Length: 347
Image (cartoon, rainbow, N blue to C red; front, side):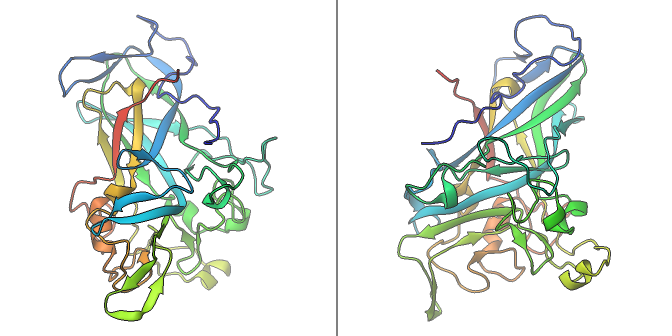
């Protein structure tokens, strides 16, 4: 059973915060009727919302303990071991290309790791949010419900009258200034141990921006080395080529910009979908399209952002990243991993 997500789950469907001009019962009204239509805001207003996310493999929702067929270039069968990632810097993009900043609601706690009655700890602070699609503890079949499951990001925004929204934009990863700090003293969702347990990237002195890992049925093999095998194929996106070592960071040296920041900016066109009904989808099948998850030809198992890792070339391209260039310079292809769909209304 997937745990209940008690926060509001429709995009821009929650209550009005400040006075606003209301023309109907809906906060947002779709304009136009063809595939290029977008959403016109009736404002000005300040609004609170939850942006819902969904994790899928093709048409199937991600559930721990389930097998998924026909994954990757060799049509492998996999089950999930982990499915977490960090996002920040949310914006709406208008039909004129202007950006409307969405502020993350600050629901963080300090490093004391305070939790609510269910044991869950905050999934976001004012700078960064963590999506966690492990519906059971450890993503193990028959395990207890994961109290940190999270499929939405809470935001607020100020929207002017007559604005037409054409796209949603956000950045995948942890902001630079938060990425190289003491993880034990960090606010959730960056505290380690805490929600970031298993998301620390000690060899780079930062975080794994994505921990999206699978267990291929039969494990993986190296086609060039029969003795090299494994049972976990990982997708760890994170900054590499960081000039300040972990030991120097721990000694108080200030971090410097990494050679490969690897924070893709994701822009998703809404098309005919009303923003109020939009749900952002991450598709694992699209993430590993063009690469085998039953083989590993070198480097770390799967893709851990190594610039010479054979498995990373296709995965990075699917995210719109070049393998060895920094964000802002490496959008060699359109990302195909994230999309938007109309949210299914609860019965």
